[in-house]
Image 1: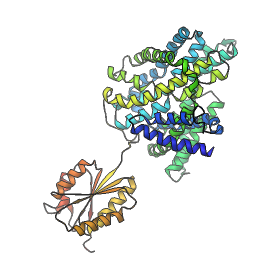
Image 2 (image 1 turned 60 degrees about the vertical axis):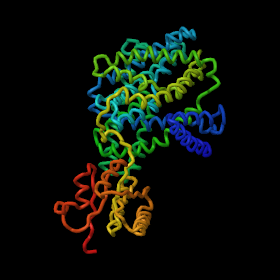
Image 3 (image 1 turned 30 degrees about the vertical axis):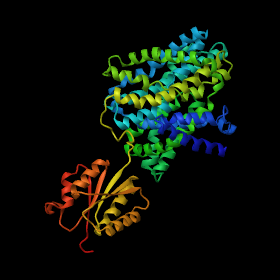
Image 4 (image 1 turned 180 degrees about the horizontal axis):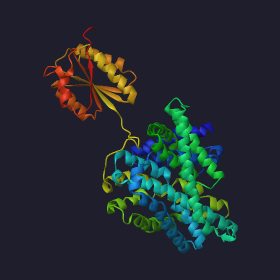
Length: 541
């Protein structure tokens, strides 16, 4: 089992990076690695790991749904609230119905079996959609109208609807007739019970998510049971996983929805804690996504795809282009979305992977007629829509969405911090490098050491390079020498290299406001649009 996990993590990571360098989504490389390592090809993953695949996938989906909740924006959801709710029901219902009707024609399924197939194929993939939407939010695409938030919420609600429908239809087909419920002499059929089950799953999911968020705030903030952000994330992940596990044994609420709601309410109840958890779950996702997508590839049965390829593509196309498109149109009627923003739902809300991998084989395992076709189409939907969606979302977002201001309190704005340390050959260079190193360690940043050549002694410049190697031994840096007037060279270099902050020295002990006109530090302060940290020389030294 240990060898299998090493194969999964190392091969999955490098497979994802190779795909990224080839301008493809990283998950494509991870899924392909899973196919190669899985029982269909290499067969190097141990049976124990394959048996635990469902549990490992559950943990990974928990991580990504908590990330989704921690990235939701209440104000944007309130702005697009009705659209988000409609996106949670109409596209999924329309796609499931369109697939059911298509399956009746192509496979001679009865309506119930066709609808079962529609529930499997209509579910959206949080593993693809959530990180993609959070990435769009971090870049500002569609944030003015809350489009990523609406898609995230709608995706979670639609999966609740389809999983409920799947369970009901599976029971009906497996037993020949589904049992109802009698209340006060009134018997309700399973179909009549479905709305009540949905309301219970959503209502209790929201309630338990709110209670979990309250409990985490009490434990992690008010009572200080943890000492760092890693422990915060560990405790929060434990409670989130507990919600999912309890929901499996007590299916009166949606565990996945409860996890997402927990993250949402953490932002409302304690924003600093939510920010720390956001960073922790970002780190967890770096590992969880490899496990999720590699095991996803390993679970795909390539042998069942042969005769189903072309007809399966027809089913997916009808479900998406006819059924889901109708649902998207009905969901955005009366909204302030433009036609381009509505068109973005095609690449932004169509990816399938996680749910299909989790439930696609269940009908076959329970002996449902047509189960092998359901399994084959589930695998095909993963292979086609997951990589296509992961590629299309960042590709089409700049063309179809407007860019707005990023709210760093709702998402992690991932960017490499680069500091500029402007040094000369004076003793003050040592203090400038020390201060720059201190700031870089705090932000896990890099440093550009800039020396503006003013005809200095080459030995003095060489000594400066040695000093930089000593002071910045544990920091990524580069040493750059440029000619020209010192203030202009500093400002121009900072703009060229996308510097976040300038660190430089000032000789003498007079306040900056009283420095003589023409001093380097004063000139940089007056002309630079970037923050400038000035390190003063100590005249007593």
